[in-house]
Image 1 (cartoon, helix red, strand yellow):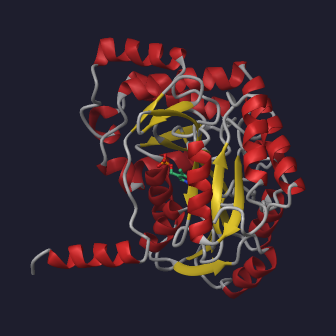
Image 2 (image 1 turned 180 degrees about the vertical axis):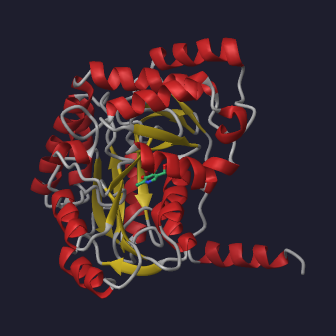
Length: 392
Ligand SMILES: *Cc1c(COP(=O)(O)O)cnc(C)c1O
């Protein structure tokens, strides 16, 4: 069979307005980005603490490059786990107050690898409908029986857990901060359900590491949640400004993942320089709490301004750096994003199939270098989209 069918499929996507364009960007200082030759305030990235461009991380990486070069030369299991990787695992475990940590090439790989290492055909997984794609893919690949739970519906989760009492193992899988709505999981209630139904609980702290909790350790720290059933996944690619996923937990859990998690076994280890930069990032998170308090203030201020203006901002019990503005219609959302871009702000226009039809939205991802003046101007521009005719 030829590959001609692909051109036909792409044309169909084009017609439906669903084909995605690729653009080339260049990161600039102060949380800015160059797009099509123009500098914009970057509100479409996950570099919440502005560490990706931090000179201290770059210096740590350069030092490692001088000694080790670029590549890690092998998977961690074979010979690629260098002193930089071991040091980062040690520091991640210490930072998260856990016995041990294991690195993965990405957060995606950490989720897929961990879920498939914990459950299989004889087991059940419970997956929130709005969970990140990597959690969903992990659940699929595991072969475990699926229980899709309406978003944050603890009652529905309880019903499904009850149905799965006879299964060998049960695993609840959830984002700590949801990437499209910016809301958070009710971790204490989930831990309680996990205990009552003898289930494991995997929490994906991708958007929470470095951001939530007094020490920036994530939602588990915010709620003071500790449980021997808890499996905590994080990523170095967002607030920590680097690349790589990790899991923290008991030594037994980490030994199991080291032996069993396939993406970690069959993928080349992260470059040593990235591991070195990860260590530097953890130091900044510990030493500069003002970065996450600034982020929190920005989120609270923007949410209040937008809600007052009559815009639909999904509710959350905690001010996370993800602030969505639901405009509903795809065309209206694209027009609003274009208008903001003209005014110097880059925000993501999120459309189906990423979100359900009719809930297209602007997603504003804040970072700690946003100034009061920039936030004020952004809120003013967004307020103009409050009436349905505004952006069309
Ligand atoms: C971004 C993200 C991931 C994937 O992390 P990468 O390190 O980019 O692969 C996993 N889970 C959630 C919730 C995310 O937002």
